[in-house]
Length: 392
Ligand SMILES: C[S@@+](CC[C@H](N)C(=O)[O-])C[C@H]1O[C@@H](n2cnc3c(N)ncnc32)[C@H](O)[C@@H]1O
Image (cartoon, rainbow, N blue to C red; front, side):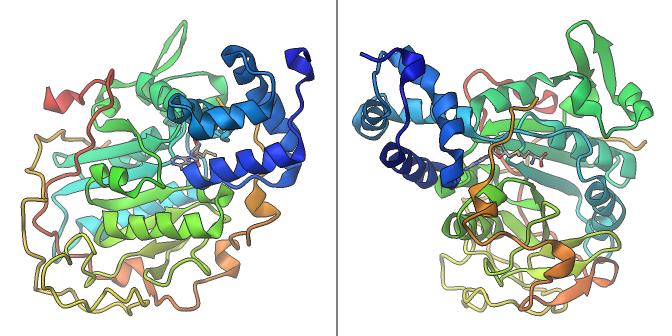
């Protein structure tokens, strides 16, 4: 019987495990990740009293404990690197160019819903909340920033909102002073920001589950899909399209694009970034369950058109508006090499790969979408989470 630290993950076992992980969450590991996966999952074998990765695979695939164990495994192998104001140029674009469009005439948003999909330990979510607050544009309005991740450990850390020094490597000290209180266990996020942020456990490949996020104005999904295979990326991007309100924005990481993934979005050239926008006139599949003309159903890259006056029908699918939370002005684990960088066709950097089939437009000249008659997104809380302050 080998000692636990002598148990090896052979090539065949690794292929089976990576296939299972890929099916479950979209991440595709390259063969070079085998030693890292072996190291990270070996403790699980010890904890479960198993003697080979083959047995572990059987448990994951066929045992009734398999589902929960798969969550554990994914938690151990995901890359959770993040920090406050990562890709700061994009947060500037959000604050200085996207929010003004969403707040602008002719149909200013009276509430703002933003989703950070794959938020890791929450730094991105709080950075978005800070940028929104500092814009001053949604003062007195309802603002919600949702963070979701497949890692329960990350979601728990995000809810806690307590951070160590390295999380602040890109945040100006003055901002840290303004929005955090220093305590012996770390820097605690200010209550007024915490109040607009909610967190939930969502696997982006679980499309029905993703619908709990509701419909949003902006989705940030940065440094998540780079680890996915193309088929999984498409599935997630299609789901994002459905989650976005017409005229809503999709912001990817600096090295990611929708090239070869989707033509449904418009490419929008901002001063510092290229972002994607759901056409204002689009009718989401969310709406098109009735006899609405399927003009948008083909998902072709629709050129930007003037704002439509016709609105999708209201229905019981729309949650009632929630009480508002007004806002005023004013750890990572060591990364595994992404398979995408080696195997799946990697996303091209934005500046070099504007989407050929997408219509390019400028945010400042674009008409914002008329606000459809929807309530704010509803993200049910996982057991053990607390409701946002505004809803208690
Ligand atoms: C590198 S972090 C990025 C964090 C943050 N977006 C940023 O850019 O700083 C990637 C995150 O995506 C999460 N993730 C990976 N696959 C996922 C999936 N299928 N559903 C939800 N989250 C996922 C991981 O758990 C990890 O926390």
